[in-house]
Image (tube, rainbow, N blue to C red; front, side):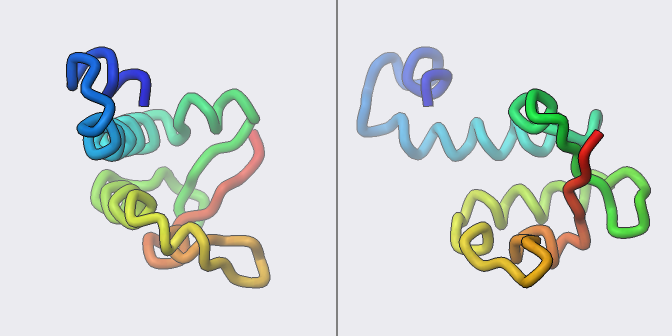
Length: 96
């Protein structure tokens, strides 16, 4: 939100919300697609991988990130604690 507010909207608080979703999408796709975790996940020792343990490709990372931006899939989870966005992208969060 701070990146969107300070760098992209020039201090327009109403437009910052929409831009913040765009920043979240880009950050998630780039960081999870390359190093396997966002800065926050790295801080807490988490990593996102495919169900078989391989690196999550950019296509599945993009699908996961778009669903995460919709927020509803992140609110629906199964008995294993995996969100709907992770289930549809066939992704798993693991500890480093």
